Structures are given as C-alpha cells and as structure tokens.
Image (cartoon, rainbow, N blue to C red; front, top):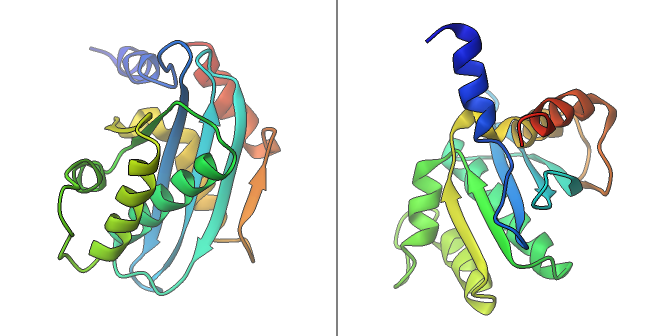
Length: 175
C-alpha cells in the first residue's frame, strides 16, 4: 500500500462515534529531560463536529503513562461536570486503556490512585466507555497536548482554535 493509501486508511478511523454518543479523544505529552508535558482532549459529536476541548500544562511527571492517565482523568472530569453523555473515550495509550478498563479492585501501581479516581468517576456514570485507538486517529488531541506545554494554566474552549482547524477539517473529510 502506498503512502497515500496508508494516510487514507489512518484517517478512515478518525472521529466517528456511534449515533447518539459523543467521542472524546485524549492524549498526553511527556518530555523526559524536563519531566514536563501537557494533556489535551477534544469532544466531538457523532458526525465529527467539535463541541469542546481542553489543554493543560503538566509538571513533575513520572512518565508518558502519567501524562496519558492525567489526560484521561481531566477528560472524564470535564465530561461529567458538563453532563456530556453518553461518551466514548479514545486514547492511543493501550496501557491506560487497559488500566482503566480493568478497574475491579484497588490499583497498586505507582499511578494506582489516579486510575482508581478515574474508575470511580466512570462508575458513577456507566454510559462512559474507553477504547484504544490508533495514534493516527488521535491527531487533534495530540496537537492539543503538545500545545499545552506552552500554556500557563488549563484552558477550555468550545470552538476550534486556529491551529487546529486544518486538522479538524481534514478529519471531517473522512468521517
């Protein structure tokens, strides 16, 4: 398969949620040299229209997994606070997806309390699910997580930021 075929295949996976569900793509960024990074999430309806998003700078991270788990926590908290359900969360971190999905007892890992918090929030609203997605299907959340490192505080928005418009438009062409 040629390069264009790979791009089209990757874009075909992007941002279509089941009818009546919202999709929340989440991502975290981590820079080992500084232990800083950012988190980003984007919320879309079933036709791919962006409804909201958020970006937060992160400091004193333990790992890339830590940034990804914090992104999941922030997105779940935002969705619950704004009563945006039912929701399908998507992350390109298979580890985070598995940890959140496997919540049956207390998690004893280094990030266990964070995973327990996510699980407790999700248990309050059983119509919140989390799936793993391919990295190529998580472009907008990735751009937000990367952008977050330049911010001074958490930022939420309800329309597409200028630097995201091209990525959102390209995704919408394949929804």
